[in-house]
Image (cartoon, rainbow, N blue to C red):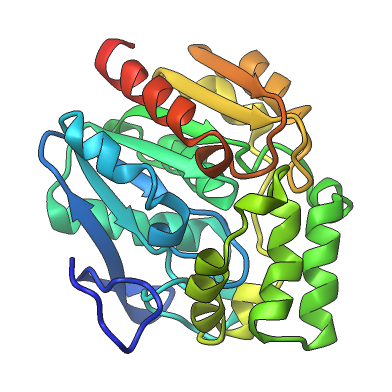
Length: 282
């Protein structure tokens, strides 16, 4: 994994996954380690990428004996982008990950997803259950109606900044501050990583994403699920944790105090330890 001066994040590998939604698509990803595959799925927002979301996590999983695969969802990071907002629905993101899984020949995958990435993990498990061995979810989307998400203060603030036309590091910080309970963790490094990537995103990626409420279908997911939810989350209501527990047959969810929308960043050591124990012992 070598740095490239063209980008604000290290450049990893690319895989061509064929045509999705009428366009040839390429997925960018980082990879480390060997063993059972764990695919890390990042959330939405300006400058989002797999590396930026999970750089403090996936190396630890690799050292514990797992093959960590950290893609950029289609439309994000260094993966393919399109201007067509109608294509940025859940099926579009799932198809991107399915293409990656098939091209890499992966079996028995664990999907680990935060926010939008959690919705992609749930949707993937419903659509391609034969591929999935486990899920790890951090405040996943896809368990509320759209109006509920749009009313959350973090999301309302994000769209307000998008509509203002503000760009650059200051706008990025204004969006990102509500991700975290502890604002001191929002370092200049994070802002400087994400701001240049945000400038490459299309307006479609900044529009309202079309993610259905999958609550009524959760009972169909039979694999073991580990969940986390920050009680101070300003983007996804913490009441969603009960929906996971009530709907998923084999699910355990930890409510994390003094934690916003990024449990893997704010409580990194606890998150890594708990996930690795789940992967090793169930």
